Amino acid sequence: MTRIHIGYFAGFKSRNTLLLEGDSDGLRALAETFRSLAAGTLTAVVFHELPFMKVHHGVDLLAVRSTDDRGIRRADAENVFLWERTAEGWQDSAEKIDVLTQCAQGHHYLEAADDNVVVEVSRGEYGDGWWRTHG
Image (tube, rainbow, N blue to C red):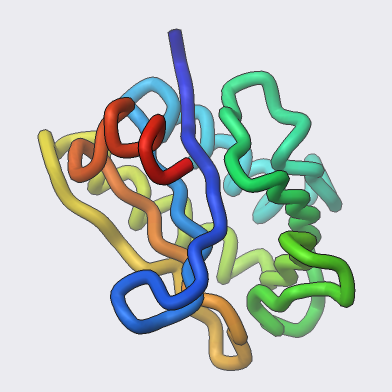
Protein backbone atom coordinates (compact mmCIF):
# COMPACT_ATOMS: atom_id res chain seq x y z
CA MET A 1 0.00 0.00 0.00
CA THR A 2 1.21 3.46 -0.87
CA ARG A 3 1.89 5.34 2.31
CA ILE A 4 3.53 8.40 3.75
CA HIS A 5 3.94 8.72 7.51
CA ILE A 6 3.64 12.29 8.75
CA GLY A 7 4.32 13.54 12.27
CA TYR A 8 5.50 16.60 14.15
CA PHE A 9 8.48 16.23 16.48
CA ALA A 10 9.61 19.10 18.73
CA GLY A 11 13.38 19.16 19.11
CA PHE A 12 13.96 16.41 16.50
CA LYS A 13 17.66 16.56 15.61
CA SER A 14 17.69 19.79 17.68
CA ARG A 15 14.97 21.41 15.53
CA ASN A 16 11.18 21.39 15.46
CA THR A 17 10.47 19.09 12.52
CA LEU A 18 7.54 17.99 10.42
CA LEU A 19 8.75 14.57 9.28
CA LEU A 20 7.33 12.76 6.26
CA GLU A 21 8.61 9.30 5.39
CA GLY A 22 7.38 7.00 2.68
CA ASP A 23 8.00 4.22 0.24
CA SER A 24 8.72 4.96 -3.43
CA ASP A 25 5.02 4.81 -4.42
CA GLY A 26 4.03 7.10 -1.57
CA LEU A 27 6.79 9.55 -2.44
CA ARG A 28 5.72 9.56 -6.09
CA ALA A 29 2.15 10.36 -5.00
CA LEU A 30 3.48 13.17 -2.79
CA ALA A 31 5.59 14.58 -5.65
CA GLU A 32 2.54 14.51 -7.95
CA THR A 33 0.55 16.42 -5.32
CA PHE A 34 3.30 19.05 -5.22
CA ARG A 35 3.30 19.21 -9.04
CA SER A 36 -0.47 19.80 -8.99
CA LEU A 37 0.08 22.70 -6.61
CA ALA A 38 2.89 24.03 -8.83
CA ALA A 39 0.74 23.81 -11.97
CA GLY A 40 -2.28 25.40 -10.32
CA THR A 41 -4.41 22.28 -10.86
CA LEU A 42 -4.80 22.42 -7.09
CA THR A 43 -4.64 25.66 -5.12
CA ALA A 44 -4.86 23.99 -1.70
CA VAL A 45 -4.40 20.51 -0.28
CA VAL A 46 -5.40 19.21 3.14
CA PHE A 47 -2.49 16.79 3.51
CA HIS A 48 -3.82 14.86 6.47
CA GLU A 49 -6.88 13.93 4.39
CA LEU A 50 -4.90 12.44 1.48
CA PRO A 51 -5.57 8.68 1.23
CA PHE A 52 -1.87 7.81 1.27
CA MET A 53 -1.09 9.75 4.48
CA LYS A 54 -0.71 7.98 7.83
CA VAL A 55 -1.04 10.79 10.37
CA HIS A 56 0.77 10.73 13.72
CA HIS A 57 0.39 13.18 16.64
CA GLY A 58 -2.80 14.64 15.14
CA VAL A 59 -0.97 16.66 12.49
CA ASP A 60 -3.32 18.93 10.53
CA LEU A 61 -1.51 20.34 7.47
CA LEU A 62 -2.94 22.72 4.89
CA ALA A 63 -0.70 23.38 1.87
CA VAL A 64 -1.48 26.22 -0.51
CA ARG A 65 -0.09 27.72 -3.68
CA SER A 66 0.84 31.32 -2.98
CA THR A 67 2.42 34.29 -4.71
CA ASP A 68 4.87 34.51 -1.78
CA ASP A 69 7.13 31.64 -0.75
CA ARG A 70 6.37 31.92 2.97
CA GLY A 71 7.15 28.31 3.81
CA ILE A 72 5.63 26.45 6.71
CA ARG A 73 4.50 27.74 10.07
CA ARG A 74 2.47 26.52 12.99
CA ALA A 75 -0.99 27.92 13.45
CA ASP A 76 -2.22 28.88 16.90
CA ALA A 77 -3.48 25.35 17.58
CA GLU A 78 -1.12 22.53 18.47
CA ASN A 79 0.12 20.47 15.50
CA VAL A 80 -1.80 22.60 12.98
CA PHE A 81 0.35 23.91 10.13
CA LEU A 82 0.01 26.19 7.11
CA TRP A 83 2.47 25.57 4.26
CA GLU A 84 2.63 28.32 1.61
CA ARG A 85 4.88 27.91 -1.42
CA THR A 86 5.03 29.49 -4.85
CA ALA A 87 4.69 27.42 -8.02
CA GLU A 88 8.49 27.31 -8.17
CA GLY A 89 8.72 26.24 -4.53
CA TRP A 90 6.29 23.35 -5.02
CA GLN A 91 8.09 22.28 -8.21
CA ASP A 92 11.47 22.34 -6.42
CA SER A 93 10.01 20.21 -3.63
CA ALA A 94 8.64 17.70 -6.17
CA GLU A 95 12.06 17.42 -7.81
CA LYS A 96 13.77 16.78 -4.47
CA ILE A 97 11.28 14.00 -3.75
CA ASP A 98 11.86 12.51 -7.22
CA VAL A 99 15.49 11.97 -6.22
CA LEU A 100 14.40 10.05 -3.12
CA THR A 101 12.28 7.66 -5.19
CA GLN A 102 15.51 6.48 -6.83
CA CYS A 103 17.31 5.79 -3.52
CA ALA A 104 16.93 3.00 -1.01
CA GLN A 105 17.59 5.42 1.82
CA GLY A 106 17.96 9.18 2.27
CA HIS A 107 16.24 12.46 3.02
CA HIS A 108 15.79 16.01 1.80
CA TYR A 109 14.80 19.18 3.57
CA LEU A 110 12.08 21.18 1.81
CA GLU A 111 13.08 24.68 2.77
CA ALA A 112 11.69 28.15 2.20
CA ALA A 113 13.14 31.41 3.50
CA ASP A 114 10.57 32.01 6.24
CA ASP A 115 10.00 28.48 7.59
CA ASN A 116 9.50 28.29 11.34
CA VAL A 117 9.40 24.48 11.26
CA VAL A 118 11.77 22.15 9.41
CA VAL A 119 10.17 19.89 6.77
CA GLU A 120 12.14 16.68 6.28
CA VAL A 121 11.08 14.08 3.71
CA SER A 122 12.70 10.69 4.15
CA ARG A 123 12.85 7.26 2.58
CA GLY A 124 14.10 4.10 4.30
CA GLU A 125 15.57 5.79 7.36
CA TYR A 126 12.98 5.14 10.07
CA GLY A 127 10.47 2.44 9.09
CA ASP A 128 7.21 1.21 10.54
CA GLY A 129 8.78 0.05 13.82
CA TRP A 130 10.19 3.49 14.52
CA TRP A 131 6.85 5.11 13.74
CA ARG A 132 5.01 2.66 16.05
CA THR A 133 7.37 3.62 18.87
CA HIS A 134 7.66 7.37 18.25
CA GLY A 135 4.53 8.18 16.27
